[in-house]
Image 1 (cartoon, rainbow over the protein chains, first blue to last red):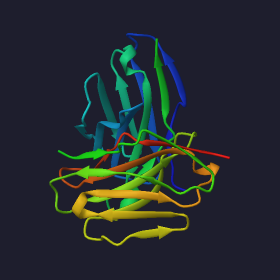
Image 2: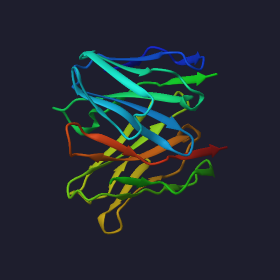
Image 3: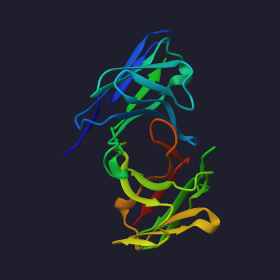
Length: 114
Length: 116
């Protein structure tokens, strides 16, 4: 069974901390995505990566950066966490050669910044 | 710019009722894909259906059915004889096929509560 694994289900961090959210997929997918989910706002795209070391900004990249050194791993980095980054973060990957139900999502990381 | 609107924030029904979740989209692409996802309390998004812009046939899968109408830019989702296990947040999404990767633009979601 194909999987996207997010390293933490719940995370509590302090304001100003550098935070790493990790996502690993075992499907050899080229594309990977980070979304944040907030009540009333749905899922909004933060960053995506179309291949190793390749990345592009999504709709709300401010305050975030990403790293993709290996195909299977896509990290979201909060350089200096702030309370307005308290949210649910969802990682996804997609197989560019397959059908479009090839988007697979992780279970999410609920981040609280205090 | 792509946009997906789910005007219903929350719907409550009693088990065995039919319920329709609305989705209206905006795009300038002539070729596009529409999706529905279910998000149960566990948090993971579960794929339900993909529809491409050239296929306007309605689809039925068990108790689920989808009505795609290009003329009104709508892709509505109906659950027949709802069950408690259908309680979840449902997202409609539109796939952007331009650029270097295909991105999904999501609506704000509809929370469905099915009670006994």
